[in-house]
Image (tube, rainbow, N blue to C red; front, side):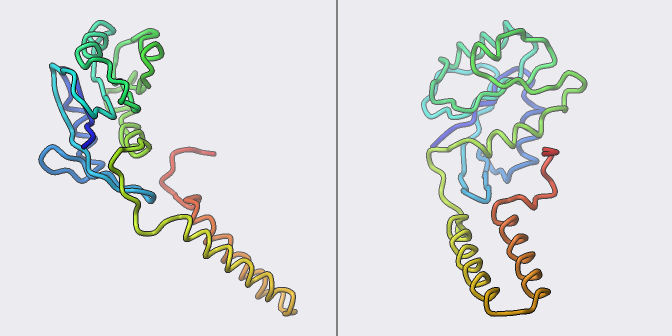
Length: 188
């Protein structure tokens, strides 16, 4: 199966964050979103080596030189679609050159770490399985409800009922599209 490689001399803060965000046992993380679920092997190492199926890389480094050494030791896997680097140091253009996202930990080592979980949830894992409630099915149900409400609206004179039905439909649509999440950090 796929791997998440967490590499560096000080991987503890990243590992602690991952284990607090996901169910974990042995060396696996169970990742579940409203769209899919998967279980991926986590490989924590100070001395990485090339390995197949590395789909996510998290480097925890103190310098550009360390980042270069770790990435080279991994064999720069093209399969790693998710690439994150955690560092208090200024890495210059290293993250951009190597297609990594540098997490902002400039103020404190734990700043920016919530992004680790978000990035892993956004990864398209090779062995993901759809969750039972598929958004497409929910949308189909909502479109059918919208059609019924539209038909009812033309046959009833009760404006209050039409407004309540329209409000209910809007709330259900927002929930289906994930627009009702209060835990979203994005202000937009």
